[in-house]
Length: 369
Image (cartoon, rainbow, N blue to C red; front, side, top):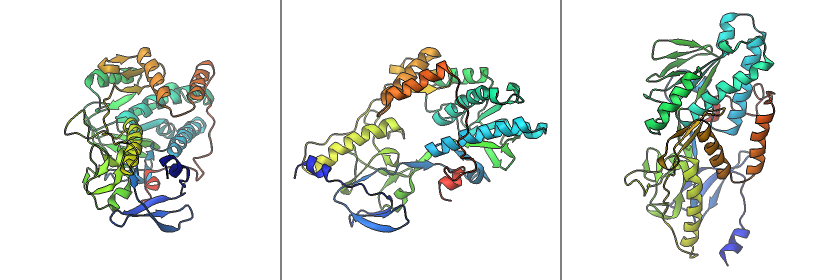
């Protein structure tokens, strides 16, 4: 049978893996109706991704809002609009201030972009809530690191910090969260911030499936060689956030947990799985970063294509162009939506997720704690 014929006969199983016995060549899966069964395999590609990384901070898992999945993002959008609506209808100054205060923990890519975009989003939404003044909005970005965007060099993090602070965003570095309650966040600098919104963006950790595997790991990620194979298990491959893929461009390091690497690893692992079955030749995974882009909302962004630091509108155009290029499909539709946002006002309609069960509002529910 040819490889194309075999792929044509492939069957999609609607279930998720909960355990795997690599020696026996079997994976235990759980279907949407809660039934478990074992599936045998000749070749296995492990790509369980990652989940939100939690810290032992009292109240954080139960009260923090996640921002990893699309459902969580939609929920957070509804939650923010709901806080503005309640503040607009309220009369107690202290409660109004708390509802207009939004705390984001983690100043990496996700946290910085959430805080930057969220600040502009709420400002634009105020036309629907005339009783809320712009000076009542308070966005706070907290991180224990000495600078924002620690993954990047100072040539990008420092311009981004200056831009955000000039915009009025409260950035607190070398600061951690000590406790989270229903009405406030207690910080290590001794301050208590009354708020109803805490967004958790402190990073990710490999998916729980990895814990069920009898394989070597590095910081929770499955060890693989440059061909994405698991040592000692030539029939097993691993890619993405859950795999510690050696970075051939930086000896001694592993590739970061980003979609850019995961997408490219997917193509390489497909080739190598086929090669292991006798079709074609295998290839080592190698990718050299061409730079980074961070969207800060409005016409502001920072980027370093080919190591050249950029900021402002030029970086924004480059950032949007890269994002369009990276989309697997429908780039024209996304570009059209962006263009419409320039010509027309944003829509600030709630989707009803705050009181519904369509999204997981807290980190604990996302992790099934």
